[in-house]
Length: 142
Length: 88
Image (cartoon, rainbow over all chains, first blue to last red; front, side):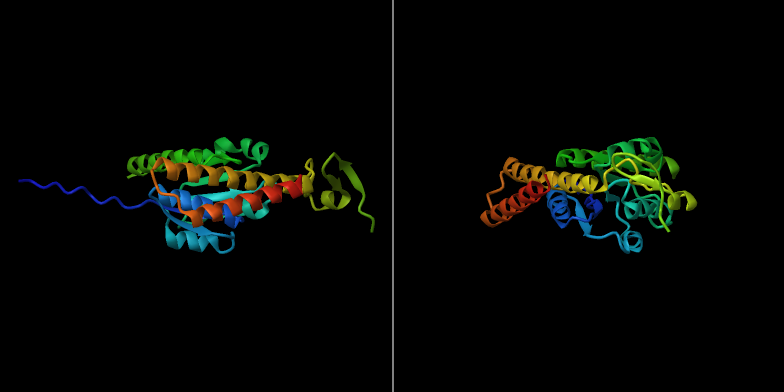
């Protein structure tokens, strides 16, 4: 009798960064129950080395709008730092007009945008699509 | 020295000092306090719809109701609704 062992799939690791602990708790519960490993970070301080050390498969970053210099700087730093430069990012924002102007450029940098308020299913769909695209990119670059 | 306003609209302004610094404020064209309120309300709406969907998803999976979790979720929704009410 031949026994076939299914390969154990590694849980995809998501790092969620947000200034609201309520939003983080909700995202963490939802994604954990959907089979992801989730790390949350309440502030953007020290997020670059943290993200580099954790090496998550994807980062969910909150961006509050044109007046949110920290959010935009964090995004740029995540793209510039060697440890995080290729990690796909889902940017959650309510700043529609500000982000829409740069959306194509963001997509070229591996940054997908999700407008708030969003449904958790939309977040999940975007995560799945982004991770799948990221795998294809890695394979084609290998 | 008086900082002379050279341009303004419904939400923000550009002054002499901004011109000297060659810096146009990011919030020019926006009412910052309104924007901050908007961001906070949108966050709370995301929390409310998210908790509702999370509860629905657990039900779809046939998970038994965790009374403690339900009470916690209801409290979070009530707090979010109250925060929205205070901002509107």
